[in-house]
Length: 205
Image (cartoon, rainbow, N blue to C red; front, side, top):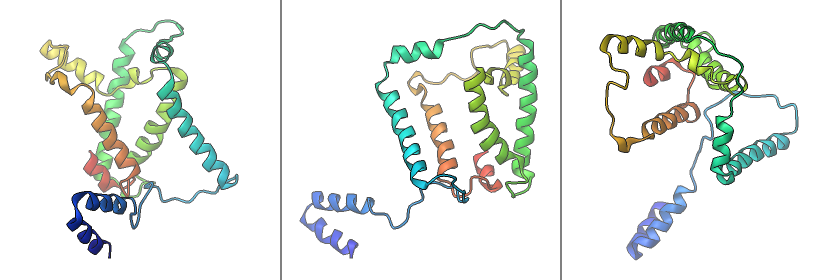
């Protein structure tokens, strides 16, 4: 019936047809808000969780939208000097994390499809996506010490003598590659039907 009505409106004019298409787009037959399919036992009334979650999201957006940028920049640049450490442990941490990444990639291709048995989903969704974020906020830039790409970059610069990149990207790209990769990662987490499945990780890797 909706298709027939759209056909009749399209003969009346493109504006009417566009209005109908917009209405149809706002009335999906089925929509998935999140890929998670697990049940959780709520210890408080459901309304408390809904109000608290919505308030956290809304207040976060309000803060980012209306907070003065210079104040946010000064806050992000605040440092508490606790001492100095040598740089060589960074190479050790980076090399160890690179080996861990290689082992996780191998587990993604060769390991079990059971997300409770395969270490890749656990490391990405729990340790990296949640745990590392919290640790960064509490103790500072831990990623500087465990970045798995720092050790191979130092090895390449030692061999080639080039320290400022090997491929020159156009200036107009700016941060857009990082934005696209982040949205792809978020899509895989929130929309992909089985983000814990090994086959999905094969596609992502």
